[in-house]
Image 1: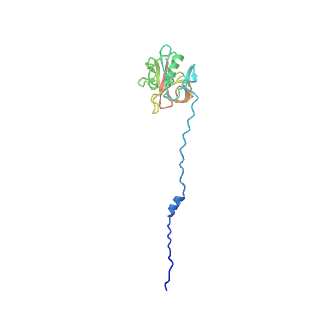
Image 2: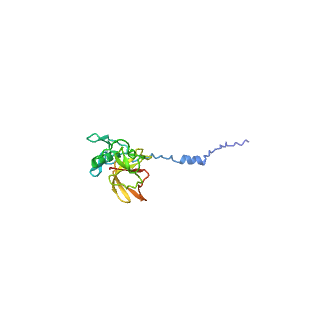
Image 3: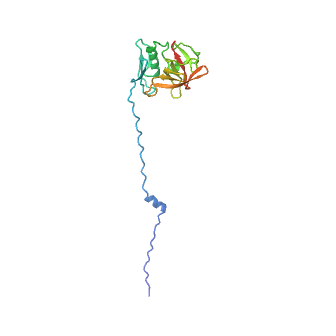
Length: 209
């Protein structure tokens, strides 16, 4: 007598590694797109707009430091400078308020000061008396304050002294890097007999005779 054995079917199970299961179950990350930078607010001023005046001479807005709006010439052809750079205001101020024309009406702001000229002596190119920063002669109203070049401004800067005290001076200026405020106060100190305007870039000041 034969005994028939029913076939035994073996079932195999495939094991999925736990790490793989986690990968399958996780949702793909959504990358956030960078938001565009917000534009800077535009200035309501345009180059040539009046922002101040001193002794009846207007001071104009220039926008960016390197902006130029053509050359300004007086009626007699005298070169007042590039609109509306700092040099243009200073020469225009001396021309109209002080009736002065510089023998050399060209050059950058830093070139207004000649370091080889002795303190209190004439600067022939400008037709003005020159004083170094650290002079025995105190700055006066209407003097031209001359700044040297810097790492961010290779041309230097010039301004007009509008007020003085024993501790500070106020200057009025044009083309101050997009700012609409034409006035600035600088510290002034007296060391012994010498007057010094605070700031490493201040070269000195010029004065009409």
